[in-house]
Each structure stands twice: as C-alpha cells, then as structure tokens.
Length: 568
Image 1 (cartoon, one colour):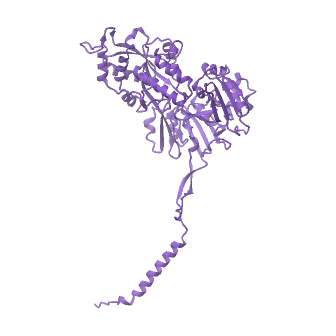
Image 2: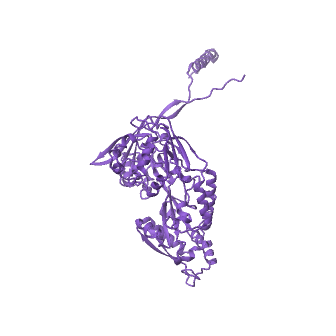
C-alpha cells in the first residue's frame, strides 16, 4: 500500500488569506451591529385582582361599617378621609393638603387639596366634610356615644371651600385620630334625613373619592355575592396599576381557600388558624403577616379584698415569670402571635422598646412567692401565707381558644404552687356583668385596639377611670396617671413619646395586668400579584394602604444608563 504525502507548504498562503478574511468579516459585523441596551421589567397598568372577603355584604357607607370588616375593606378603596395613619401611627394627610394647630392645642386649621373630585365628577369641598360630621354626630349614627359627645363639644367653622376650622373646648392631643371618618357627598345625600340614612339607596351604589369607584354589585341566587370596583382616573393620589378589583364574599376561610384553589380568586382576606396548615401547602400562595391591633392580657382586680395578696406587685411579677408565653403562642396560636411586654402596640411611635421584658423563669417565680411569705406545705400543692392559700378564680370568655389558653395558664401557675379555678362566661356578659361591676378576681381578656391610631391608654389605666370607666383593674397609681394626663394635652410628638415611655416603665414595674401576646393577622395573595406589602395594621383594611403599588402586568423598558463622559 502506497502512502502519499502532500506538501503542505503549497497551501499555507491560502489558509492565511482565509483566516484574515474571516477576521475582517467579524470586525465588520461587530461594527455594524446596533448597540444593545439592557431592559428592565416595570409594572404596567391593567389587570383584574379578585379577592375573597370573609363575611357578608351589608352596606357601603363608611359611617355604618364599624361593625362589619368586610364592608370596611371595600369602603377603604371607595372613600377618602381627612387623614390616614401610617404603620407607626403617625398622621398622614389624605384629603388634607396641610394643617396647623394653635399653641394651646385647641384650634385645628385644615386646608383640603385643590381640585378634589367625587367619582361622579362633582367637586369635593369642606361643605362635604361638615355634612358628614352632621350625620356622624346625629343620634342615628353608628358611632359610639363618646365619639358623638366629643364632636358635640367641637365648634366647626367652614372658612371657604378648602379651609375648615375646628375649635376644641380644651386641648386633646389625639384629636387627629377622630378625623379618619370617610367623607360623604353632600350633593347626593343632603335630602336624605339622618334617620333614613341607614337604608338609603346610596349604600348600594355609593359615590366616593378614593382610588377606586363603585362599578356594580354581583348578585347570585338572589344574594349579593360580590362587588366590582374600577380605578378612578381622577384620584388625587398615586394612581393604582390594577385596573379593576373584584371582591367576592365567603362565609369562612375554608370556603375562601376552596375558591382560591378553584381559580375564582387571587387573594384571601384572612388566613385563620383553622386553615393555616392547609393553606401553607399551596405553592403559589404568598403570605403576609402583621401584628393585629389586639392585646390579650390577664387583668387583676387590685381592690378586691378577697384576693388582697394580688396588691403585692412581687406576686404579680412572679405570676408573669411563671407563664411560658412563647410556648402558649406556639401551642395554641400555631406561632401566630408576638409576646407582649407593654399595653401599647409595638413598633408604633409611642412604644418604648427599652421596656423591661420578663422571660419564662419558674424558679425565679417560686423564689419571689416564697419571699412574699407563701410557702409550699408538705404535700407540695398550694402555697400558704398569712392571708391563707394562694388561690383565686380566673374568669375567661367561653370560646374554644380562650378555654385552652385558660387551661394552660392554670397549669403553669399550678407548677409554682398557685391554685386557679376557671370560670367561663359569655363574651357578651364579660364586660358588663363582671369587669364593669368589678365582680371578678382575675380575668383573661382581649383589648381590642382596632383603629386606635393614637395610643391614648388613659381610658384603661387612669385613676379617674376606676369609677364608671374602663380601668377595670382599678389601678390607682398617681405617677402613671400624671403621665397619661400630660400626654393627652401636649401636642408636641417627642414630648408625648417621652411621657408614654415613662408610663410604660411604671407599668412594667408595677404590672397591674399581665400582657400575654399580640395575635398575628395573616393575609394571602397569589404570587402573580406583585408589589404587595402589608404594613403594621390598626385594622385589616390597612392592608390596602399601598394598593397603588400592586400590579399584575409588566412591561419591558429600556434601562436608563448613564454614559461615561470623557475627562477634560
């Protein structure tokens, strides 16, 4: 077999020419290619967000929704108020453009934003504000007697279409808290008598001034099954990206979760404890949690002679040390709670983060009880002191959850030699029949702080509220009361924060009641809904505070890049 050897030297110049040609073509292609600018994804306008509301439709009127969170959620998007409050409880202007307060804290001058419009195109003025207040303080209002009484004491003067003045009989620092009512349109309701406002046709086809306008009711099987809202392009604030919001009503969280699984909704207004484990299994459901405006506490009747030993603050301190509050939260609230150490809501402007925090320490608790003169007898059951057995009755609401909490509290206290007898009573009777009449020894209660944007703990802990007030513990502490008095009349924020800090220090030292936990609110939205953030809540409707940033549709846009400039 013959082998042929090709003389490669005859081909080298051809190969060189080919390589040079390819390189030249590559350079030409690169120089002729258009420059590529990076793109970014941005929110775009459009889309429909559907949410399952737990509850039922009643009426869409902000003066009558206080007892119906489902109505209030919808009204938050339809109606505006003079002020909103941010997650720290600091007032933010809504319809108001600017405001001023006199040096003595009795005169408030407010100026509305210019060119405000109702959803029907009519101008919104201070006359609408005055009309709304007239309805609010009428005897047919859904507001409580104390709120109506406050407004009856305020002199209101409309200066012009944008300026209004409120004159108080005495300084009251939380006054801005009372300016969060939804404003109603006078031109549509002025002919409706206050006693007929509750049944007015307006409540089923409302006109507001918020970011979304009422479109229609969804009626199925002769019942109102939902509400459709459409973005209002004349809104004075940030324009939402989402074009339409549809609310659909469901009786409970289980049926709302089923609706999500069926593809009927994208969000669920609240994930309650009974469906939380099941909901967590949904791969495309995002959860947003926030501290609820509620505080579960143990109240002591400090002036009940049957349990005089509770007047000893060292015994009250021992009782708190003996409670494993985090274990209680994990066991009975599935971890959906925050250990409480103050009667004020955490992360608000008035909350003092340096307040003393007592850990679970049954050994220290037993030592304090022994030092107070209560020793365990030979059988090691119930401690005995000079005033007898360390024993009392714990009153609690007759719900399943409160019964379980009471059982746990009794067991923790039994472990340090305290005997507790449990007594369940209906929630409806707890306050009127027992707390208000001081016919109790110790009580497990929930403090509902919904819409309490300004903390103002005065009604619950001031000396003047012991008789015919809400100081159900009958805590008679002059130092704490003075701090609360001053914080009510001084409008300067830093000074008020210092006064409330001092109050909380005294409270933590004296422990007239034992703070247990703040429950957690959980909201669920499909991952296709972007931009969702849930702030600290003063009510569930606050989850819509940043609705303008939510979006369902995106678009690609050229990224703005700064070109490097040659140095001179």
